[in-house]
Image 1 (cartoon, rainbow, N blue to C red):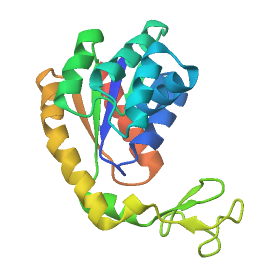
Image 2: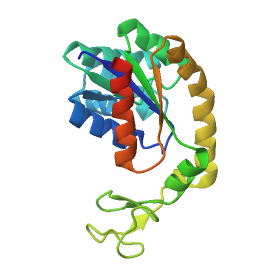
Image 3: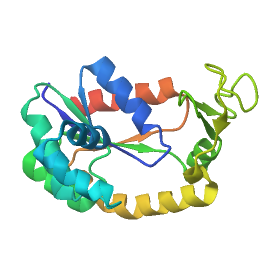
Image 4: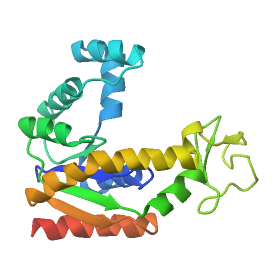
Length: 212
C-alpha cells in the first residue's frame, strides 16, 4: 500500500527503535529528517548547501528546507513511507500536508516518569556507541561496554532536569499536532509502555485495525 505514516512520540518513547523495526518488517521506507539533512549536506546538493549554512552557524534549519528535502525524497519512492522526526509541530504538519497526504498518524504514549527513568538511566559507549540502560539492559561490568570494553558515559542532555524540560517543550508543540491529525480522523494512539515486542505488536495491530 502507498501509505504515508507519521510516527509521533516524545523523546525516550522508543519511537526510533519502533520506526526501524516497522520499516524492516512492513516493507516501508524510513524517512528520517536527521538522516536526510546529513545526506544532503554530505552530497552537496543545492538544498544541502543551504542547510549547511544554518547548521554551521548553529541555527535550526528552516522548515521550508526540511520540507523541500522530504519532497525530493518522496519523488523517487514507491510504496509505503514512515516519517520519523517530522512533523514536530502544527506549522510543519500544515507544510507537509501541501506536498503529501498523511494516511495514518501513530501517537506513541508513554508516561513522563517512565520516559525520565529510561533516559536518565541510559548510558552510551564512548568507543562503539552501544547504548545500555542500568536496569533494563545493564552492561556485564559496571561502567564498561559489554561489546568492546569501552568506557560508558551519560550524555549531558540525559539529566532529569533537561529531560523534563524537553518533555515540556514537546507537549506544548505536539498537542496542537495531535489535534490536527485527530480532526482528520487519522490519529491512532498506542500505549508505548512495556517491552519492545509488546509495543511493536500494539502498533501493528493499531495500523491493521485502522486500515479496515
